[in-house]
Image 1 (cartoon, rainbow, N blue to C red):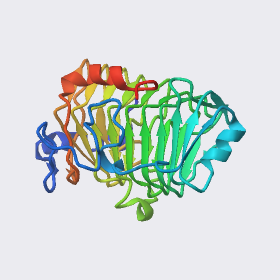
Image 2 (spheres, helix red, strand yellow):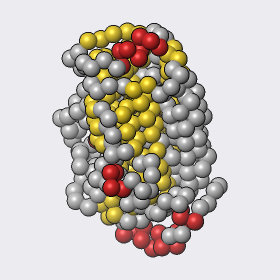
Image 3 (cartoon, one colour):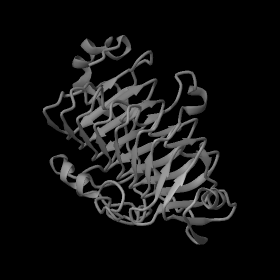
Length: 327
């Protein structure tokens, strides 16, 4: 396993401070906590019609027209309309470059037929976008890139083989939920915050909930976090992770809670590459043939109510519900 100086320079100190890791404020994380009204449905339900966590309240194209597309030209025209639209993808859409999705859009696959190949989707400078139930393969860039955007829900997709990132979120994006996705055959999986030098734009933003995702043999960045605080990594299944699971860097604050780690030598740590350590708190996780991770620092309180699944049940829950054809 690759070991970098930034990641391990505080390793000795981390052991001493692990017990002192704190969550500031008050957070309703226990199994008895009520689901917030904005979320609309129990987060353990795979077919939940609305996101929980930071992306709660994202409605996409609700209330607007619905169009069904099966080729690239119709797809591009639909996702770039200025009015609220639900775009149903029925077939394989072959893109040659990253395609921008406008505000107030729901882009959703029909059954298991919706596929995006060749390139990916660019959610840039917009708000209120939902991307669901699509298979992304072989992008020449990212599968999904989110930047300078708010209120985004990325749900029940299958992502593999992107040249760069699987699902990258950056440049002051905020209020995002990434849920029920299966990612596999992917090296750089989920980046949150693109640069150590972008703190002036990113600080106070990049608040993301990662919940019920299946990181299936991905190598790294599950996610790799800069500046976002708090970031919530909840009830995900990490299986056969090649390098590391979660990394907290550059003043980030990450709560890693009630996840299932299997065959993952390095489940979570502080710092990565040349990036300085952030803060990371971990609780109620389940480990099978895995390391125990590295924690330290102070993470802000999670500001929403939620119900956490028991970590020992997460593997079966996520394998049954993550990916396409499950909504």
